[in-house]
Image 1: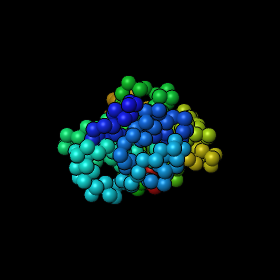
Image 2: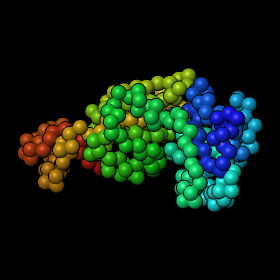
Image 3: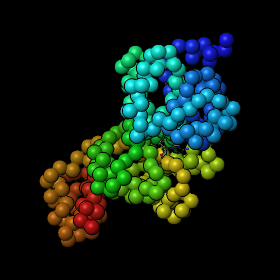
Image 4: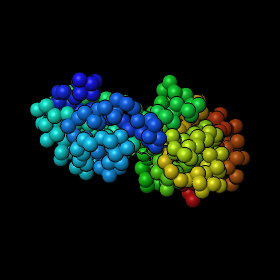
Length: 289
Ligand code: SAM
């Protein structure tokens, strides 16, 4: 009996990571598990079908996506409790990471079903590992809201965060997202754009938000594909402590003066950090426009 048969002889849920682009990243264990289980729950059966075909895996498959997951979870858990083995896969990377599976795993755990991770690629870890940004502490934010007001509000909340920030972003929103990040985090905040990881046009570009925004705006090719955006955490939390009085002074000066001069004078008057005031002035101007 091979390892996979041994592993799949009792009811269990296998959460199986699949490649995020390069098929060479499929693990041998993932192939064995997908071959050995009774059924595979796939986010998109056509997409997973191509992967299974590549490895000549003939395990029956059904679709489990965000719209039917809640409805199916109880029945699937019951079947696993009775001895069935199920593998959960998403379109790419690790299931549940900005992908379906949470309701199923939660229900399975509540019912005492064995849940086995079969780890492998995930875009967030791949991007972080090559970013050159601090990796000891980080925050994964997944996708930001698609509407600008909500996106900016979320970024505002994250502005003082000192840990490395990691976001997923769709290609049609990457420019808008970088623009909002520049406004909220300031032009100089360091960031990394990780595009098309493990694929033919893999590009990892690091620089200030201003530099990155320019690089993406200037080259339409850099707006295509899949993206992870990483932003360095705030390195000087006190710098962003623009109190109400400093903001009042800044607002008055902004009525008469250019941003840079207003920020400089406000810093001299209030003692608050000049860059923080400059960043705040950009936001105030942006809100007014
Ligand atoms: N579960 C996946 C994982 O573990 O990474 C993520 C799924 S989420 C629906 C898809 C998003 O992940 C994309 O919009 C992009 O932000 C990111 N992503 C996935 N593959 C990528 C790749 N090869 N390069 C860069 N980002 C990728």
